[in-house]
Length: 190
Ligand SMILES: [Ca+2]
Image (cartoon, rainbow, N blue to C red; front, top):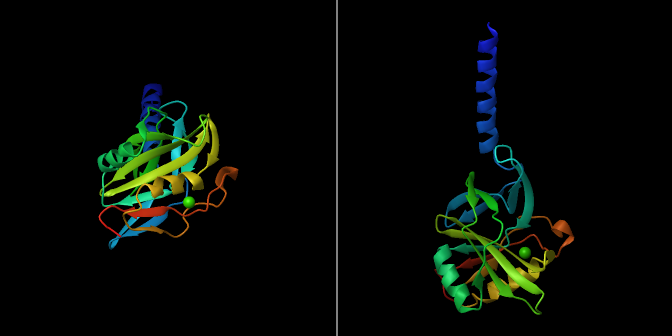
């Protein structure tokens, strides 16, 4: 085998490994969601991707704590804008849903109890579901996921809500988190 052939083979092998690495899902545990007879597998934490674009590192960042059923990001945005939320451009995060990597489609903020605090939600669209990861922060400091989940869910009190089974760790990142997400069915009325 000539040197050129070996180099060519190694180049192809490297490219194949890069493609495999790119498409490999996050190493985190998956959760199963049963929605109207359909089973959907998803990663219960958002990931933040950093580093060299061909070999990104993924850092688990926020728990999924609100799941909207029978709706779209656009419909949720409309409701949230009517309730004091505003659009914001911030770093993108990703969720693995049905083994696809889904980039957040929209991010919104709402002022908190004082001028330093704000609620921040990232929304991820999958079929007729919208996964939400919402937190309360002060500057770059994380304060609570639970309080943010309650605050966001309170906007939708005219439709059916329930808490699902635990999908994430309790007290993840040493911050208030009960491990359960709130399910909000936009097709229902109370
Ligand atoms: Ca929760």
